[in-house]
Length: 342
Ligand code: KG4
Ligand code: ZN
Image (cartoon, rainbow, N blue to C red):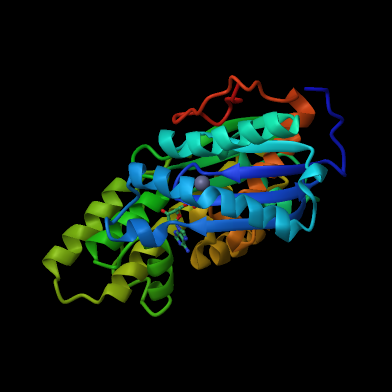
């Protein structure tokens, strides 16, 4: 495959299949989203109370071709206009990742276009930049999803240090586990977010673990505290529990993220990952971050949860800095933030 010049007119087709969304997007110049299609498997997994890996792989296989076709069609381009084919190479579920990586590598071979394997965590960082390309480095990015909770210093493209992380459950995992305990269904984040709006966030003062120390966070004790409280007070209202649980999560995430931004002299704070779709986290981080003198960038809700536009954006930047990825690239379920898929 020939060397490619990456510029404002470079068109990337990206595929995302790391978990339970089959997504494809066409993005030009790293931030002009021509189309972004997301087909969710939530309904398929809901009856199991969580994502079933084998079921996810099969559902990706079924959805992939129609989703890619829709992305190209909605972008209003011919396949020949696509310059690069990208896919999430990790982290994620191995079988699910393999579906997207194999499809992208096949299209790359057939069309004779470069392939780029993308780190899903890096892509979540790009979701905020997609919506606001004027953001200045260094940034503190709070990445909060179902699998990860990290406070990251982003000094430039591809230049990251993890300043803090969860020592046990991810924030989204805590939402999902508490929702399951309260019989609210799966995924828990959106439903807790919705019902918390009608509850009293001060009804129960749940613990804010490690509030005064460092930049790591912990949510396992909070989850246990919620369960113990409900078992002891079976008549307590779900909306008050949801609001009080959410207040504890949001409080800790805001305190730690703003502390990190102060420590590194950040020019801004960016949210990323599924939990950053949370209404209270968005409102509180904006209010408290601004009060502390930081610009706070919130990706649109569609860019917070898994999507392929962020994969295309990250691919565009990686192609500029590192060139294309070998077709020997596999799927890497435990890929770390600083690792570039090869
Ligand atoms: O980033 P994402 O789509 O997938 C992963 O890479 O994990 O994040 C999914 C997580 C789930 O745990 C879900 O409950 C949570 O994000 N989530 C939310 C909200 N929307 C999704 N959590 C809190 N409030 C929300 N509005
Ligand atoms: Zn994700």
